[in-house]
Image (cartoon, rainbow, N blue to C red):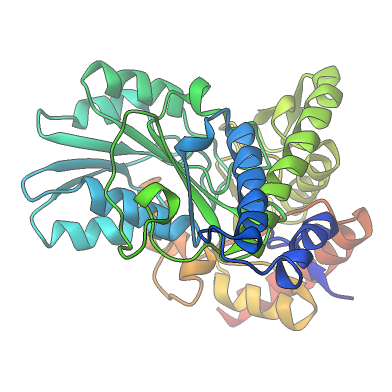
Length: 399
């Protein structure tokens, strides 16, 4: 039995997404920038996808720039707005797609302030506001943390930043498909997405740029994407991305209606999440997993459990257990989990997210992430729990 509990790393493309992409790998092969019939046929596919992505975000079509993924979109934003002597405020729990460009910019004379989260994983709006200066040119705080699943108060942060005339970006890569993402409700000026995190294809994402905001291209060359991102469009990926957005919108609307009947969901570890935030079945499986783990190991810590989280994510620390060893043991037994972001899973450094939450380096090295998805079953969770029950005590003896 092979069990996939790493949906925050990537997701299986929906069959309807694959079906949407297939014609673009065959008969619809034209260049969307070409004026002839073949190009215009391809352009219609791209235009439909752009409409779907825009509708998913509550945006206008001319506010959407297709990219190769969330990392490129974040890099375009940060490098486009940064100047020597300028100031950028980010949270300390951001994905490496934000933190790594910030480190590079810092070396070039851009001042970066990293705002820590509290012990539950929440970045407080007041802390962000306190970091602003007259030189601040951007605030960037993710909507959902990829490790803990904690939902950040981005709308409140945007209000405070806008009161000081500072534009706001949110990395919504881990939020899309799990909670509603509406750029108008959030009040953000920039937002980044990646299709493969919610059953779309890899290698395609989007940068939302609020109308009236200007941002230079990161990739220069042709005039694609209204001269905001050069390069021939990845038409199969774009088509699949649009379909994934359409499917996610339908799924979220249906789940929201169903879950409102139940109010808030108890996480089983002292916290709860708004029932309208994600799938009922996924949430029940995640909550059951957490409850049983804490029963098996009372000293286990569900990081972020006291905060509002998306329903599929658990970052659990097992004191005395090396997280990489536990992930490897479970993988050998057929269960895929992670020690955090897939972009940094090969690193032996402590989780920067947990360090920003005030955990010690040792505690940060003891956490593994379970991220449940729609394809998981109760039988799979039971089997994973059985393997955990055997692996954790064994690794504690080794450690």
